[in-house]
Length: 221
Image (cartoon, rainbow, N blue to C red; front, side, top):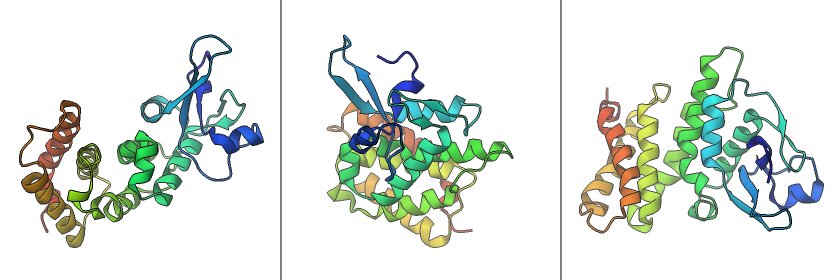
C-alpha cells in the first residue's frame, strides 16, 4: 500500500497503465487504488470523491505536483480539470452508475472555483455558471419519474449547492426550470418518504435545507 494518500490517487485507468507515467490523453475521474493486504494481494480500486473534497479544501497550492504509484505527476488543477472535462462529456446516468463521484461533482467543482477565486494567483479553468448550465442541461433535464432515488437525492443536494453559491446567477428561465423540478420532486416523487432509505434521506434533506435557505434566488427579480 502506498505510504502517502497523494500517491494512491490519480487518473490510472487502463490507458494510464499501458503508457506508464504519462497522463491519459482522454480526461478521467480520479480513482483511489489500494493493495488489499499483502504486497501480492490484488489492487482494490474505489471512487475518490472524498479525496478530491479534501484536496480542494486543504491543498495550499493547486498547481503543486506529486506523483502517484504509477509515477504520474498530478496536481489539484490537473485532477479537477479532468473531473470537469468528464462532467462535460458524460451527461448520463451510465457514468453515475460507474463512479459515485459523478454525483458529488457539482459540490466539488464549485468548491474548487471558490477557492481559486479567493487567491488572485489561482485561476479555475471554468466558472460557477458553467457548472450550473451543465447541471440544468444534464441532471435536471431528466424526467423525475425515470431516475432512481439515489440519483434524485444527490441532484437535490447539488441544486442546493448551486443556490447557496453567490457566484452562480439565475435568469428567469433557469429559475422556472429549477423551481418546476423541485415541485415535481417534492409533490410527486417524494411526497411520501416512508420507503426512502435513511442514507438517501440525509442527502435529500441537506439539499432541501439549502434550497429553503436560498429560495429567494428562484424568484424572478
